[in-house]
Length: 365
Ligand SMILES: Cc1ncc(COP(=O)(O)O)c(C=O)c1O
Image (cartoon, rainbow, N blue to C red; front, side, top):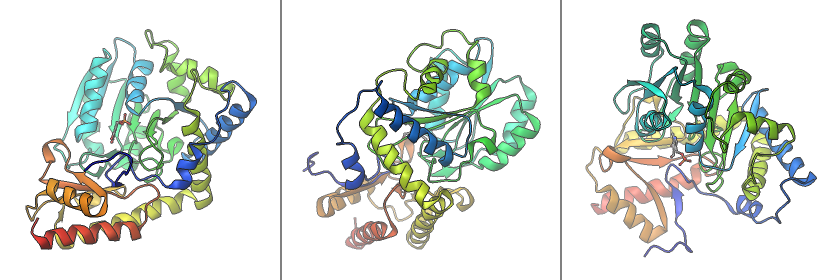
């Protein structure tokens, strides 16, 4: 029976497994958020994040999950008469378009089938035909396990559409996949910490370009809680606009130290190694859902070619080993299943899970 006090080991694509050393950071005594100690924690954390994201521009901490930054990007950076091109290749990118509409933004969509990538030429064709102030892109589509070709897209954007702002959801990409914010020429990129940062949910990290921040100052009705200009004023003092979730920031500081010690190239390679391991297993036993060229290094979506009962397999493994992995997302439920390999877990952990799945298949689940 499910018992939140005896939680399962998590191989779902977020929240991911958080280890005890990280959890202990959340139990540190709290600080006054306008005091010198907090300022030190905040400043140090943001400095490390700038190195991790390869940016000299703004990095903000938001006491929200990532969906808050979906809203923040469009509400801060688009004037009422401007139009957003929203690219969609799965559940989360589609949802961002819908959220932008709910914020009153004029949205035009560029959609591909789930499991297919957004390619630079598709964006080029759309942008050439209309007038757009900004574009949304999901770096790593968690519903399908697909990584969009961000380097090629960014090259094309810088060359042909330097004035179009680029907003990127890197929720399940950041720190697991290569991301050099300034080099990519992006304007907003963000993640929540329950993915590759391997921290419990409740905090988001956002990089914002100087030009996006400048532009936002003239945009009306940006609201208060997610207002970039107000965030920047607080950030100048190494503070947040409102009382932040200090325990999460302590854990983030700890994880940033670990990442910088490891080196980002090594962290990205570690994720690729885990992905290669799971993909090899998936190809031997089932099939990959996405073209391998675009298959994500933070999670793998596996085509259920054997027609196993995914929900029952997950449930059996939970009962026997108190461990869960992900069913397919939305319309892909049972047709696919998802195994996350991001954060602090290792190939050793993944070996356990894959062996248990094999055991259930042999048993005829
Ligand atoms: C790609 C992507 N974008 C956005 C979200 C929403 O993030 P949050 O639940 O942290 O608001 C998720 C959540 O899984 C996601 O995977």
